[in-house]
Length: 195
Image (cartoon, rainbow, N blue to C red; front, side, top):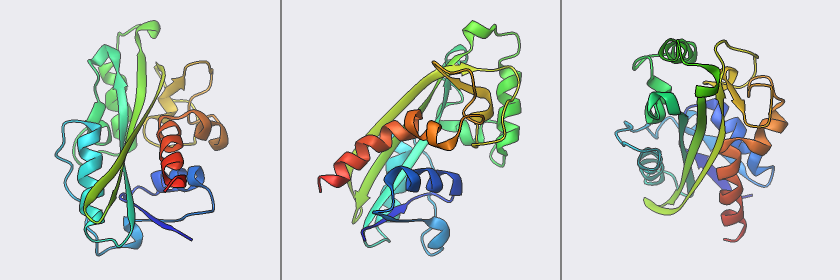
């Protein structure tokens, strides 16, 4: 069975990616490899940060490494929080802190002006070299209050276009057919199958 290291310590991302890849892959993440440190994400774009993580881990892991950098881009905020989605409310911010910061930033912005998208960029690397880059987006709107207990990050505030439920309310199987990560992983899965 081929192995794939996900260059993250975020167990939620690993679970999503493993589900999207299916049982043909042995998926692990940095939590299972404490000897591989997570690098500082100094990039200005999702692609730069994903590459930083993928290349750093692939220099220490004997096989394929996939890194994800993703986040929320809110049109009324000029694309923020963007690449700083995970630390929008500060370096040690929790998901709840980030959601509260987003709601504060959008106070006074009308419902139809609260359009946003989740964006995901995946970089596949091996032996310290990039092999491929994949991206995916999903458009939607930001609510003025949280709904739902599933998911993580901003999922309880984001309603994907064509739905009435937030990502946190939708079943994981549904989210995994339309999310930004699912769309990027569709491209990655096709690339991996052709190797």
